[in-house]
Image 1 (cartoon, rainbow, N blue to C red):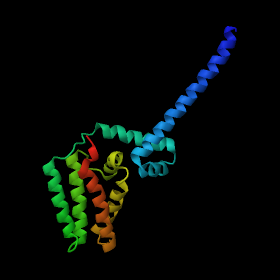
Image 2: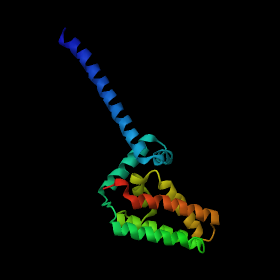
Image 3: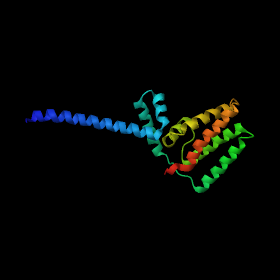
Image 4: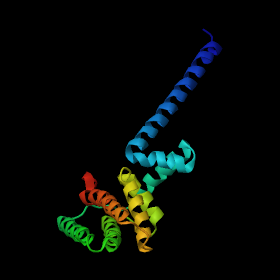
Length: 180
């Protein structure tokens, strides 16, 4: 075979292999992001309007998260937060609005102690979504009810739901799930 014939065979084969490798990489990345972020993946696709934009956003969240100093709680801190949660939960019977607001403050305190920045709600949700993508909707829902509660516009059932939502994220943050 001539060199020209060999090149005519080899170049297309190399191009096809490169395309297949790139497609496999993108599919692997998509699968990894879906597993890591859970329902947050689809929510981000919907919010951004495209998978490519969503995956870029989620990857940026991962990079930022990797730069944070997320740390496990000490046993004493874990016990203290558990006691504080029991107190907040007990407060619900007599003062449900106060209990929901206290639950929000307690979750923010726990996040801060774990190393999450807590100044900006939007960024807080983005940072949490990396390790807590399956429970971040609980936080959004609870925070929304807390906002209503501060205006005295939340029903008792909404307040009860908010406590359940806060508890889901609280339990995850408290347990560390083997993180770092």
